[in-house]
Picture 1 (cartoon, one colour):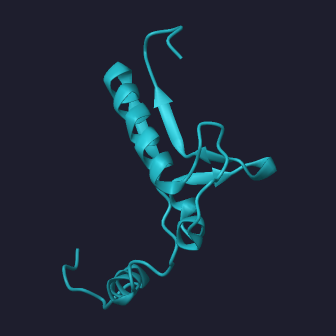
Picture 2 (cartoon, one colour):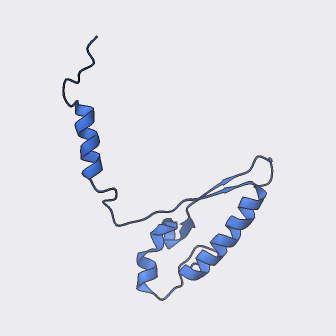
Picture 3 (cartoon, one colour):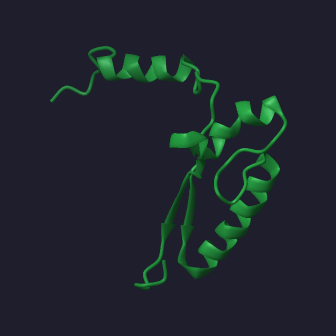
Length: 100
């Protein structure tokens, strides 16, 4: 069995190329909040309450802010639904049935 290298493989060149490539090549950030268990859901509820207030979103999901910059960046935390409503991007998990 030969232990000498026969030269770089395609996997080696791909790996080297990935090291030189930029890690991020996009401008938009999207955040998904994962809320697990009773404590996670309670903290998540407060988080969305504060974020919604900061971004001008009322409890029905309607935008009432006055900043073009906030509206431009609203897709970081929210998905736009039909009728101009904004829905928080979140995953809620609880092991106890009937709590959600």
